[in-house]
Amino acid sequence: QYNLGLCYESRIGIEEDFKEAFYWYQKAADNGNENAQYQLGLCYENEIGTKKDIVKAIECFKDLAEKEHGDAQNKLGLFYENGIGIEKDLGKALYWYQKAAENGNNNAQYYLGLYYQSGIPGIEKDFEKAFYWYQKAAEKGNNNAQYNLGLCYENRIGIEENRVKAFYWYQKAAENGNKRVQYNLGLCFENGIGVKKDEDKAFYWYQRAVESGNIKARYQLGLCYENEIGTNKDIVKAIECFKDLAEKEHGDAQNKLGLFYENGIGIERNWKKLYIGIRKQQKMEIIMHNIM
Image (cartoon, rainbow, N blue to C red; front, top):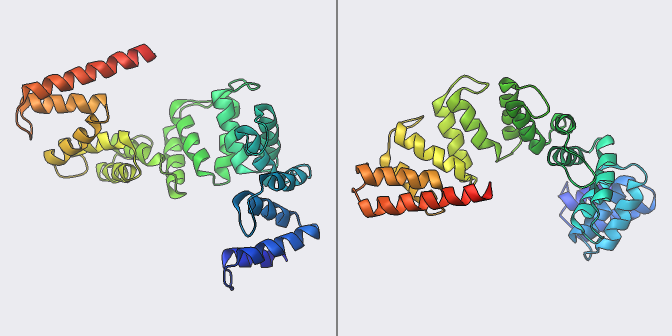
């Protein structure tokens, strides 16, 4: 019955039919199938084959959570953390994340890592515990945890610095679809961090990161075009990168534009625009100083 529900939901050998999927999950859950009950909770949560009903979703997850079902425990943690259909309670969120993590749920392990790294009410900062839980989740394929584990190794967070391992986990995260890590891989290849220096690969990863909307990578891409790093020198494209960022109040890009206008690099010399660029950068520096 449970497998039949999966077939209808996922179009396995049969036409997709969410109502039929819900029907068979319900039948299987009534017969004691815990995985079917979990899927039933997801159906109520996400309006799959039935009306959205967070209260019923919570009932499904709560019943399973008390039976040590890791995925359901993680769901309860999320609901308590974000106040979804239930009063927000970080203490209860932490409790269920801890239970889920101990039962092997890699998302809960990742969330625990975040909690221990940043510290929240009821939990003190503990970088070693953060590293421990990131490692657990990373080994189970969680790409966010793999990315954070790389950061831990690179920046000595709960573990001794090991750039080779940092690069290894960055690469694993990228292979598993993490977009945040693309910029870090670019830096690794450009500067030889944990891997042999390769400017072509650095440029490739910066490009990928820019396509994913990473602002820092766009600045690095501008530098690549300016300084012939992994690509042909192209001042016009460099200016495009810096100009786009400068309009978004990126201080370093504004400074670059100022230099280009001052020296007429790929652009007509313009003292007025140089002055505006300097003023904008100074303004950003004052804002950052006040924040810190």
